[in-house]
Image (cartoon, rainbow, N blue to C red; front, side, top):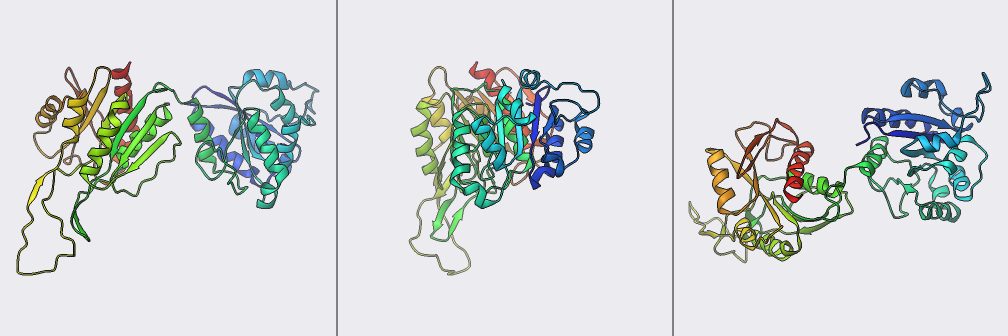
Length: 397
């Protein structure tokens, strides 16, 4: 989302200044145009020639060029930029920004900036924890600045940071997130993810290999695009970093069914990505079943059908998306599920596509609606999520 964006990168006198090279690389890789403004102290840690080689622009440090006396207009920079990023930002610079002490080119540029400002603090823990630093950070937040702190990958609202500057990739991701298209703003999306476990006894269960990665990728993509997400997750080891995702942890199909039926009436859409067990043991032993004899029979009974129930409940204006993981007759089975469950479209993937589906970081899908079928190449699940949500947006618009 940074393609074509103009970013002013402010660099201050911190030992972390060397990481600014990595920040520039990340921003440029995402398509941004970067103009560096560095403080005199910053030049003690990294040379302007290195930065200029990465940005393909002369580095600005002083009000006037030492070569020909050309005036560098901080006002023009403030009008040119789509965003200003100050990384690393020392305690000294934080204090100057919070109190309007315009004694260098970076601070005057900040005070003239018309675009959003992002700040990545970098200092030792004692300096960071000092009440003066915390007060300055709170004041800057009150002015509408965005503080990027290490405890999250994105925009942080708390004060639990440790002073270390956030990783360059995550700093660039924070700007990426800010400029992400918000075509789901105001929408409420429910997503199911992961497997369900159906107990046999206190230590054994019937389950499957689902990792939850696809469902979590969908949740994060919806959240990035502005939706309020309810993520109903089976037992997985995946975490979601987005603040606008409400996670509901469940274990069994019945628990997922109850949570989904409860949440769905308030939703604009639901994406049923979970690998839900179709059957469960009719009886669950209270104690661990001991090995007795050569065989053991488990009588299975059907679980409630989440997709069918939500398809029955679906009202005008709601969109319901299903998943079909098949091993044979893929298209026929997916189309049958689409009609039977009253889905708006269904995402088909196959275990015959090697290196996709369970536990993999990649997937290869087809999206099937009542009118069309579109096939996609194999790609990372985050990119697959983007394709699916693009299709969802079409159905919601």
